[in-house]
Length: 114
Image (tube, rainbow, N blue to C red; front, top):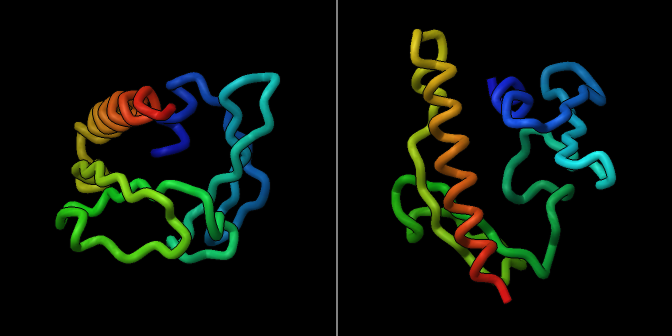
């Protein structure tokens, strides 16, 4: 559902490898390198080790989120997981609703970076 939501938002998504945990190439602009996307834990070696901001999405407040080594900044932005609507008639609408919320909030965060 996330891939479908991204595609409806204008992203070009291509499967790089299939299997239990597929890997995706996600392009937001034809002249930019793609983002590689796949399910991983916060401490996966694929993630940066330093000089990054950690967006904390835990619902149990920022204090309940795990410690992220190397993060220069922790930014708490919580939201309800649309996955609770999987298989229900509101599924697509809830994923789009959450996409808009996340995009709006991250746009605000990035607008504050100097």
